[in-house]
Length: 411
Image (tube, rainbow, N blue to C red; front, side):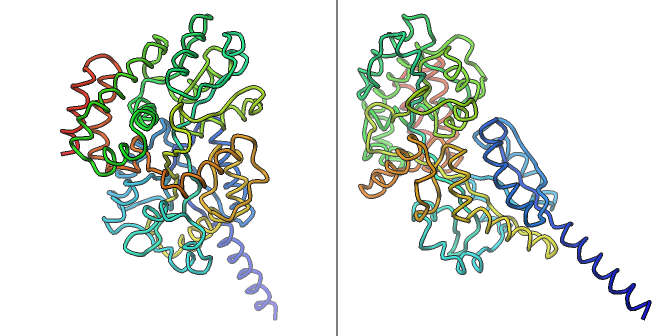
């Protein structure tokens, strides 16, 4: 009897240890204040299920450094449970046969019905769910410090390109930096997403960036877009080189700059600094792109793991797709949910606008994948575009030469 009791206690102890030992290792690049706060929501959810979160952060934004770190892990046969990934990066890993199969969970929870088709293009491969989308970001946003604009005499948010340039002039003449920007290739390309949409519209954007049409890429319209990039460059401060995006956001938050063109993850920085939408800061689409949305979607790509880790991995995927988490996470992150059935009640003014804009663009066919963030062309072509955009933005290539270089990169 005594031995039986000891066996029962030992068994219970082992079971408890097994539950406590459940863990996931997650590689991501969410290292700034607002991003870290958003990720904390997911960590707490998993901790409540006795799943330990092992963090593998890679700073820098954009995901390039993260993909480099991931390649080393996968090559050594030791992939993490999940990796934050974007667009064609997900597709590339899927083709290598190293990703997990989430179909059983996806079928049980009807992911096919609640995730927008545009996102499923990347969440699935050969009919198999391989990633859990956590949000929908859009890149054609402008963030503005209302106090700075007031001091500069900018009374209304600009709705056209000419109005935007006029507002930038006023801000600069008032002694502020016109446009807060970080000189990194992905940030330059993020500006370009909005500029091309504003210059050529959705049809031109699709022709150039999705269809990779050489005539569109090397066209007067593309040259005009590059000329507008040159205009924007004149409002950027001299110390912009290699500045991280969140430090550029801080310049607007702290009243040093008037505007920043950045994806809606920037809103998380404003909220983290206790700033209030429509009171302390304004959010609006890049002038000339109203009704259009260029999107990217952060997804957690799941890799094949051993049987001991598979249960915790599924708990992670299930937690990511939970509607209450999608609301709580995106409220903090600045993005909008990756599910269509999440109410907007918890969202602030910018969040409600983002959800409404997304629904409108999806309905009207003006929802386009962001070139800058890997949702229009594969990395090999995207990186060629980056080179041309950054060279032109930094003055080492003319607008005409940059347009020609983009056409060559697409070939």
